[in-house]
Amino acid sequence: MLKWLFLLSLGATAHAAPLTVWIDPGHGGRDHGAVQGDVHECDINLAVSNKLQALLERDRRFQVQMTRTQDVFVSLPDRARMAKSGADDLFLSIHVNSSTDRQARGAEFYFQNQLPPDEESMFMAHQENLSAQDENYQPFSYEYLKANRYPTEVAAIVNDLLDSQRVQRSSELSRALKLNWRGSRKARGRATAIRQAPFFVLNQMRVPSTLVEIGFLTNPEEFKELINDAHQTRIAEDLYRGLVAYKDSIDKVKAAP
Image 1 (cartoon, one colour):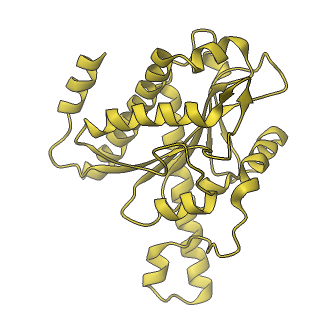
Image 2 (cartoon, rainbow, N blue to C red):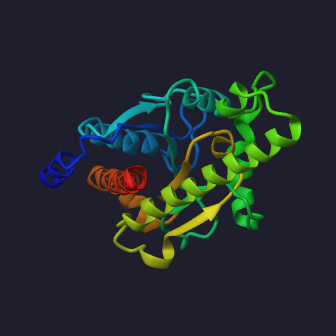
């Protein structure tokens, strides 16, 4: 597998600029996320994120940043601030799912909703957004709009166009990640889904963004896999392949006459 990844990185096109990826390991510190026994979601998120970071750093097509590199609490507004502080091209937030249904399994890839989200997605987004209270936080706006003083009506139209483009790119990113997802041995195909939901960290990004739930901590079979180092490596490799596929697709569009 490492040989394959190395050869893949050598295939980078000389003209394409590196893609800057912000990896966001969900939760951390006092915010454990989902808990099963003495296993905390935040630790799994960080382990997978560290493995993905290592893969991206070996590939000259990518530059990578992390919202946290250890078990510390980082608020949702602070995560959004970080990802908007420099030249960023993509935001990927990594989480582990949980459910009262112990049979629930599989990965879920979320991007910002344009359509009304289903009840389950709304509940999950609400739970994740609870820590987003920050009275000093300023909602994002596009740099393009800041640099151009359009009349209010024109600015609203341009903002809608930029929003639509960002959501479309986020959808394409989610699809690339899903298509390259091998998942667990017992959860494939229909158990892996692309959904839309109003997660704070997705709504506040001005770049393509996806939140991935890599499996269910509450499913006995997936629990065993999620705490396994080899399976965490497999997950990181799947996410890496999805990012490569996404970058290849946007490079082809940029290179088209």
